[in-house]
Image (tube, rainbow, N blue to C red):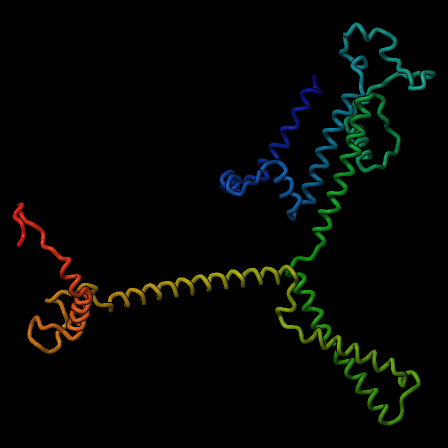
Length: 339
């Protein structure tokens, strides 16, 4: 009955998942909006991508050793060897005498109730060492050993990746290393310059040795001087690491986007104000007599613009000619014929 009860240990995984996601505010709303499942796999990825990844792997490894050790001990021991065993089948000789796989030799099964021996066996199996001092004798025990071996390989691979991430330099550390290289170049460029000047002075005096007179010596000093000069001419922006440069470019792009949005909003508001001012300056389409602009006369005196408009209207009516006047007939009123 202890083995089925031990299967409930899988609930520890859900407890660990909730513990890893405990500090995410509104994670259910964000999960629905971003269409990302904040489940056990997300919690595992978050644990492995943090600075505490190596600690999580060690803790997970220790829990697996204890769990698999417990199941291995349960599967490898027989209840007939326990002091309180009362099963009738334990009285049979074959309950305590086991046959080897070849069927020729027999041995008496002895229970190993020491828990740490089982954990030691799981540990050496996960690390693929396998000293051979402890070997499984049952099929379930061999199954536990096989699963532990595969899980051990996976954990070692994940631990290697997490350790590699821990050993990588941060963007700030990359920038610091580049600055240190620049300062070292500023110190070493002086010695290189002194060597070049000394070669030139000895050449002018004719005291060069055979090795110093070789052309490769001068070119080596010249190339070293140019390399140090290129390092010393680096600006602060050039000394930033790749991650810092990417972050700066992203921030600049965001600033440019904000400025462009503000300019577009300002131009749009100016265009609206200009259009409104032009609409207010336009004259009315149907001017009335009392509202016509005055040209210096008394009240109601039409302006020159109004006179020109009246002239155009009268010319339009006169284009109809006699035909237009002949076709016009006033309507009859109350059945009285018109004259």
